[in-house]
Image (cartoon, rainbow, N blue to C red; front, side, top):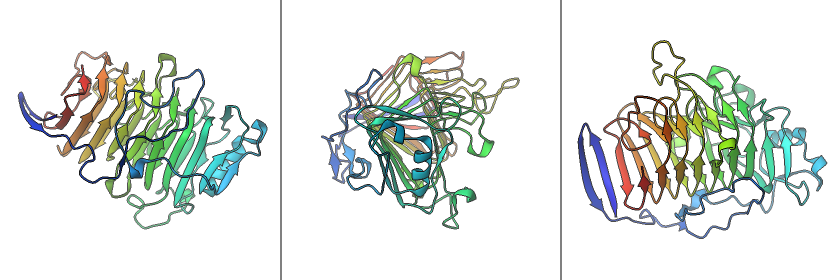
Length: 372
């Protein structure tokens, strides 16, 4: 059963609904075989998450890659090889030998908008991409003329369609990016479509202050037809010393973007700004959304099989900051755990524990979820 809550002031309406596991449309998969990533770091995904995955969020088929980075040795998997392959686009895999390898990028890998249209970066469970705590790791922007304009409506086009899967992103740093592309320590995306599958994000950072900038790991704008970003069977943080940090949205941040996050973990991330949005007098602003920062107009955030724990903020939304400026926002929460998130502010402004937003946000929460 679900409880549907529309909060208006102190009035809370509860309506019992029968849950429909397949969303009424079919094409959902419950036994997806993900590549196992084995090392001493937190594994990707929530082991307690058992939610169905829609067909469009399944791992991409990379059996026949367009290009392969490496010739079977770790030494062949260089920063230059990654940057070149990403610029050329297509289905990209790695052949760096049988053991895990970390590739420290000497420049940000940038996607060209006239490649693809499907672009897949698949680490096979063995590859870590590092920004060396000096630079962002991956960048896609359909409105950046340096990456080639391909339509007259760059803010709403269906390509490139980027998937990152079976990868670890570590020590990406976007703290010194210009304002128009700020945020997203590991990955910045504007336009097209974007999916994250069976991947991990550790120790990434973005601008430490500012009222609306964020995304320690990921920052997203302008998805085609407002279709959702999918994050599936992935981990952000997972351990205190692996926190992703930013002014807002310690793990992920966006403006005007819908998200569907499935069977994933977002824990120990931090929103380290101070003063909220708009910034309080005498503050630089920020500090909202320990794990997730969603801002914009009509918005939908869907969480299923997700654990959001031990995140921290200095302002609002210890777990989630969700503000629909036109008061047309919905949060769906199924089979998820949101707890033990810490708000260091004296003004937590919550619609549910750990979740900040307008009182009229529609909250569609099932009885199996734990929010405390």
